[in-house]
Length: 257
Image (cartoon, rainbow, N blue to C red; front, side):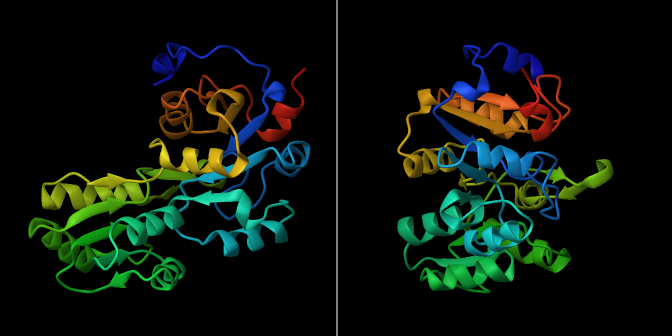
């Protein structure tokens, strides 16, 4: 993947010169338990008013996540968070009103779906909508796979297999569950909403009133953050341990000359 990124036609840019920023969350600003990475608070303070956080998070609502992050010192409001889970439910409510949906998701997202008017069912769905469901088990896999074999369409919040955890561990993500469903049902998703697809980036640009050409994406994942940015013509900067990364942490980025 690093070789692919090296071939992308993106001009070099000193990162502070960008007018606007789309910033990833897990692995870029926080650990898996929402603990800020070194320098994350200072980075957001430096970029105040010029950024939106664009995340493949498919567990929380923006309101609840913003409260949790503020409690840990990150100066974030719900309006500054574009989350794959919420955007997927909005897509379903707007594009498929009244559709029967088997929603595999957290309790918070299920409540949010009902508030948006989504029709949640446990049998004969038109759609199986998959988020990061920590209750996903063999019975869930069997029921959803057979729904898909009978003609239901699969909508997935994000394709991430994992996200980083402290001490080099990983947290299983929605994409791992998606691969199990696709393998059992013999199908591919009808829609994937999260990065590297363009929807979250486009919503972030809309909230900022920004153009892609004036916006820098900061993330840690070359397969989602960097590739998604490049598809829309945005420059990108990687943090973390990828060979293309400019710095390990936000603090290290801030120390660059």
